[in-house]
Amino acid sequence: MDKAKQSGRDLKRKVLALLGSDNFDQSLSELCQLPARQVINPLFSLLLSSNEQIRWRAITGMGAVVAKLAEKDMESARVIMRRLMWSLNDESGGIGWGAPEAIGEIIASHEGLAKEYASVLISYVSEDGNFLEYEPLQRGAVWGIGRVAQVRPHLVQDAVPHLILFLKSPDTTVRGLSAWTVGLLGAEAARPQLEALLGDKADVPLYIGGRLMVRCVGDLAKDALAVIKHK
Image 1 (cartoon, rainbow, N blue to C red):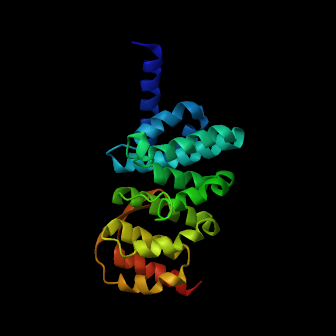
Image 2 (image 1 turned 60 degrees about the vertical axis):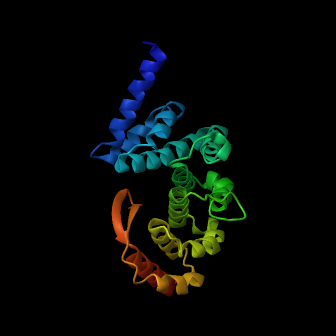
Image 3 (image 1 turned 180 degrees about the vertical axis):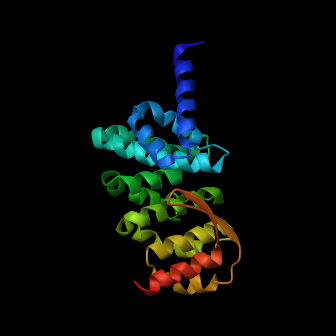
């Protein structure tokens, strides 16, 4: 077997083992010690994993690895960002699974990249921008904005009008994630739409703080209203 192919498979197995570790915090640190340009391809492939925990940890890993790379080589980090953006382009021939989430995680993890690419992330929920019409990708974009809102809310405030529209989405997960995100952004303008969701009992998967959980749309709306009230 070709040595390059063998080493590539070995590296993917190593990355997969780290993402599946019981002590992910330690494994994430180990992942960041590996050569960034070598682990990026395995991480890209694992964004497609059918195992939700592995997929979300690949997103977290992408953020940590690219942020560390950006400290040493900003242009190489930009190349990865452009690769993620390209995967969401119709001309790429793919769907871009995990790309909006990865973009959001990277932006949350590195201030310099955040300043450059936050507007791109917002464009994915804007009908005047690079709007993602496919609802599973909308979920990723909204989650990505929410992830940024946790640490750099000032950079994604312009997403609020678009997120308010998403609070009426027929897609349960888009509605729930939008409620979570407008709460993080303290969006007073979203109050009427959030109040309308209080009786929504549909369940939504939410990855937050390294944990995948299930929340009710109505509860997410209630939490958001509580945050807005105290802003």
